[in-house]
Image (cartoon, rainbow, N blue to C red; front, side, top):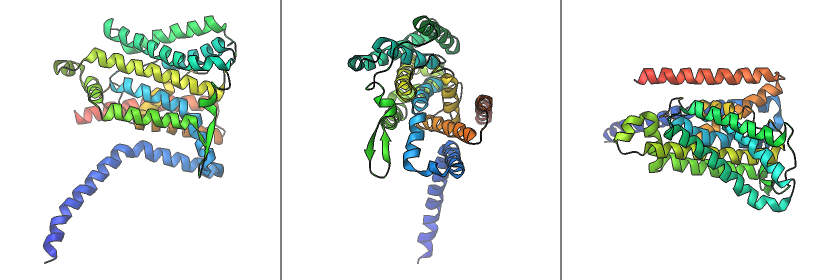
Length: 334
């Protein structure tokens, strides 16, 4: 009498186990690498296992994690945003030059910088959709424009200073039990990730993003406002770049090269998180996890005293390997 129920339950249990393995396969690679890198860093320096040090690591990676969230949207829709690094630099340099350390300017400067970032992203989106310029070329041109504006404004050496209350988000924290110090930047990353996850993976707009990235022509025939979707994701990417600049300025201070190369780091983070260059596939939370994975990788290289060129080389290898793997998966699945 016991045998029949056991035989009936076995297929259901197997199906549940199969579904669990499928979910693990989707999430597994970047999360597994993240955990392995963290353990290796901890074995090299046991201080990494301390909660305060772990929070400090996330605080250091927070600007790139926010930047990767915006870049993930652009890549999933089938584009690239190369202007984000220059926009990060412009945010920091402009904030220091305009406020000159005046704390009373922070309250209008923070929303003003976020609006500026969104405006730059909006212009990128309009150039791509209205002028039909490929996103790679459009944002590369914008990167040059922003770089020229920063150089003209600063003369190669940034002026002014950032007020202490402006730097609060990037370098301050609150005391909490167990963790000790919980940086504000970690809370910012958490909010960006949760909101971005819902917007991309649980809303109708997110479905439209994946549809446009998978096949824009088919999406348009299905009634999806392709141009509006593309403009929206570029606008959000610019907004995230400005927010990343605010966090980075608070953490690292003012520099004329503070955002240099971050556009490629963000692309690397997104592809490490499983997105495919060309669009149609990706995950915003995994892109954020990919940014933290890169930070752990670079930290591990520093712990083993590898020179800076090795870091650049590894980043290039990651991008090439991820794009090649994405192409292989597309060919394999047809």
